Image (cartoon, one colour):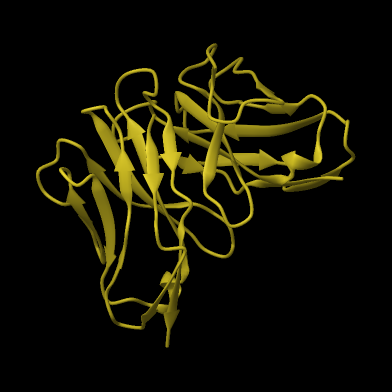
Length: 117
Length: 114
C-alpha cells in the first residue's frame, strides 16, 4: 500500500528565508509520481511541482524545488525566498503508475507553513 | 473559464437524508476523483473513475456511491448521511489516471451532517 508521511504539522519561517518541508513515501512500485499542492486559507488546492520516479534531475518551478532522494524515499519541498503569501497548508502526494493502485493519488496530512514578516 | 464546478458550495443535512454532490468539468479530462478532507488533515480518496463508464473504490468508499455516465459529470451520492460524513468534499480531475497528470480541483463542497 502506498503511504505519504509529512512529519511537520507546523512550520515557521522568516520572510525572505528558505524553508524545507519534509515528505517521505512508501511504495513498492517502480513507476510513480510525486506532487506538492498548496492549500491557502481560502481552501482551494493549487498544484506546485511534480517529480517523476525516473527523473534524474530534481524538479524546479520558480521558487519551488523538489529535493528528490529516491533511495531514502523522500521528496522534500524547498521554498526559497519565502513570501507572506506562502503561508498555507502544503500537501505531498504520490500517484503510482502501475498495479492495482495505478492512477490513485495518496496525500499526506499536510504541513502548515506560516511566514513571519 | 475552464475548470471544475462543484455544487452545492455548502450544505447542512439531517442524518439519514440522501444527498448528491455534483461535479462537472469542462476540460474533457478522462479521470475524475472524489476526496474528503477532514479538519486539519489531508485528502482521502473516496471513489474515482479513470474513464466514462468505469468507477473504482478509493480508501474510504463506505456510505458513498458514484456514477460516470459521461466524461464531464461525476456525482457523489450519500445514500443515508451520518454525522461522520461531515467534511469538505473535493472533486478533482486529470487528463489521464496515471503518470505526470496533475490533479485539477474544484473549490470544494462543505457538508455538515447533524
